[in-house]
Length: 226
Image 1 (tube, helix red, strand yellow):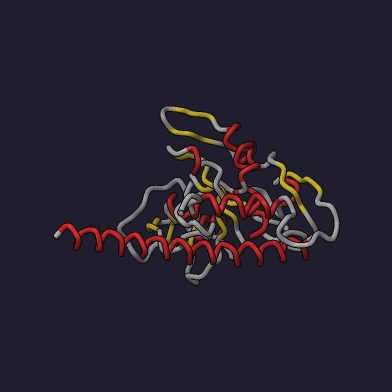
Image 2: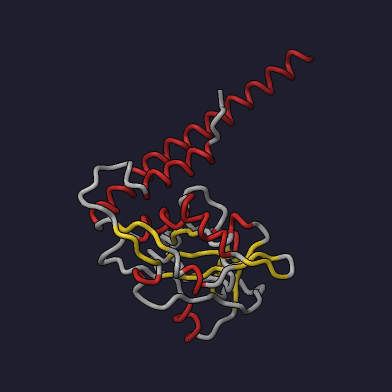
């Protein structure tokens, strides 16, 4: 009947995941802040304007961190920027980095997290409006943290912190780092990630089927009208 949208299904999956209802629990989760699980300080990205020189370093667009439904960074969404070697090293992204949008006109994008996988194999840096967070991977799964930060209960807390300035909605890295999420043991985090990825793939398949069925229905209607 299509009464539940794929977007709502994704939200429900993430909520159940962080509540410990998708996989068997070894032990109770503890609550921890984002700050407590970082391996280094967060970094706001490059604020320098883009260049037309396509041999320069690739800087992601803001939309690279908010456009994908699977919570991965869109590494094909970039511009170029001239940077000295020291800045390239400072802002260079590595697989496992999390990016969070700190300014946007859409409240639902502010504080939204995505995972950088480094699939392009090229040197890429984050823009000023995407904050970089590096997780202590010896104890925590960046993918799990990404899911937990995007789950509905966490989003409610994040959106409540946002402030509007000159028509733009913003949130500082400092406030984001105070947000608490459930932190089960690493092995359980990995099992949760595997289950969530499996379910999200099914939702993607469902969404594709819905699009195809609606296209068929529209074509049928047009044929009947003719």
